[in-house]
Image 1 (cartoon, rainbow, N blue to C red):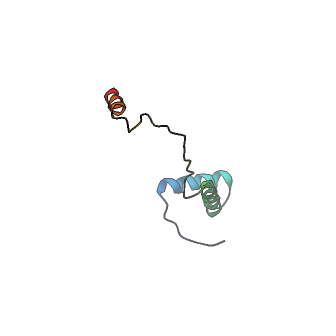
Image 2 (image 1 turned 90 degrees about the vertical axis):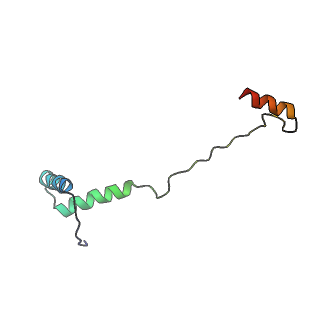
Image 3 (image 1 turned 45 degrees about the vertical axis):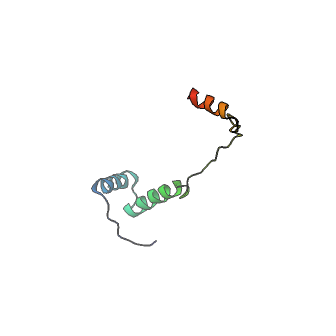
Length: 75
């Protein structure tokens, strides 16, 4: 197992030490398990993207000036 140094927040270190007491495992093992779980939960860097498309019909015949003004007046 590789060794490294991490700077942890006090609250995080307290929680790790509490888990060490409960589970009876070394601190490094608990930290590795939690990190591995957190990293496996990440799906991908890019969220799924769904493009919604549907058929769109013209609301008005743009060549009919009176129809265009009629639609604009309604809004």
